[in-house]
Length: 415
Ligand code: PMP
Ligand code: GLN
Image (tube, rainbow, N blue to C red):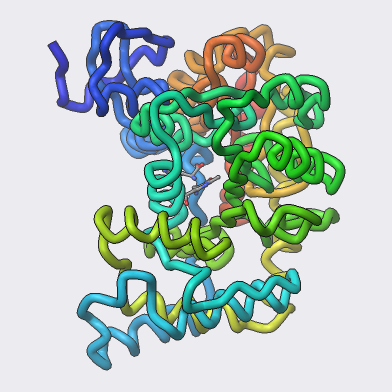
């Protein structure tokens, strides 16, 4: 019996002999409980818990302040001016041209806005359309582990096999030999995420170049999710597509959600060689056909903001990172300082904790703060390796982070 009524799962790793497509998606993201019942994503589970308990929500990654006023005003003006019917399936010309200009301004990349860029309904749809377009049963999709939940779900839905390379604490870099071993003749897609959610790692040139070389050797397509491209702290983000030998085999995915703090608008985009983009567009047009018309023009305005907007968001997040990290350290946790994203991971084992999933469920009631357990982003072996790790989001107002830190300082005494 499968109950579809949002029952919370025990988030154990489950195997079913002949899972149906939706079950493969749920299994891929560790959503299916041992009794076959279905859960919601870890983000929704923890946000619901935070709302119920009135806890500060440092779980699901969304900012508690809106992005730039001129972007909001542009969306409002677009609605008032009647930009309210379907946009072209591949996105408005205005936004595709703004994406191309952004790629050129920051990275010297020049995708053709007519044939090499499509707008998607968030990066999530970009990931979904790409995997459904490119992989099938018998293929392998290689990701780092921990991996963002939708990767596991969509690989599962596609019927391909999900293989992984571990990112190891404290710096969450892949081991070169393990990476080489993980590639096989069946590796069709390498799906990387840089800067990396949940670990906060930003991969250096050598790691990325290695991915490109191995992908070329195995004739794999590189899909790179760079939604946190502008959120790095003292290190440079290197788009994979800028590396020698990469452009002809790389699909780059990004989104307005993180850069402009409009996660609810769900405007994303992807770019890459025409033949791959055409294949992905074919699938995208039957997933959503097109994406929110008035928001597309507004995000085009955002992409044209001057450089100091981009440096400003990274600087402000860096100081938020430091405030929360200091609080987490003072609470007795081991902090893995992130170089990018708006997430910081901690090891809770210094407080005698060995099960971060259990702790995450108790944390809101214990101290009034919600976080995300890292093992849910892993297959069983990786879950064992990360079993005491928790992820906290720091894209919140300074006062909120300070209050969260004060609450977390009491954790030790409440366990
Ligand atoms: N990829 C990563 C790594 C993410 O963290 C997220 C979530 N914010 C997404 C994709 C989804 O982005 P979007 O909200 O644009 O669909
Ligand atoms: N990307 C966000 C995070 O990692 C959550 C997005 C979602 O809820 N699907 O927290």
